[in-house]
Length: 77
Image 1 (spheres, rainbow, N blue to C red):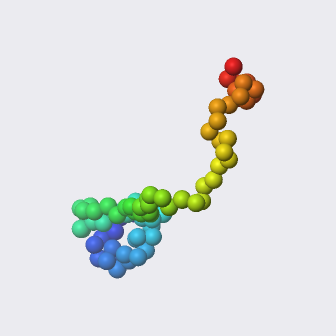
Image 2: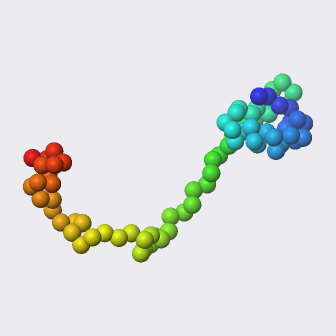
Image 3: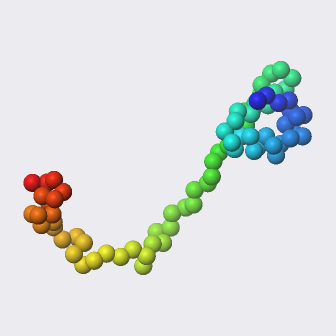
């Protein structure tokens, strides 16, 4: 949709909602388009090394080589 600067200032919250829904929002000065309002998406959380410590477990044989039977069952002969 196309809006004038005055309309954009008056209805900014509504225009932001439209942009978040993926709609194209064009702001024009008179008939000349000057800006396009787009959503930037949700910010990602920063990764923290060690944040899963103590939350993941495995058995003692988890990294042992597969047996011939297990390899055959998986299609590796």
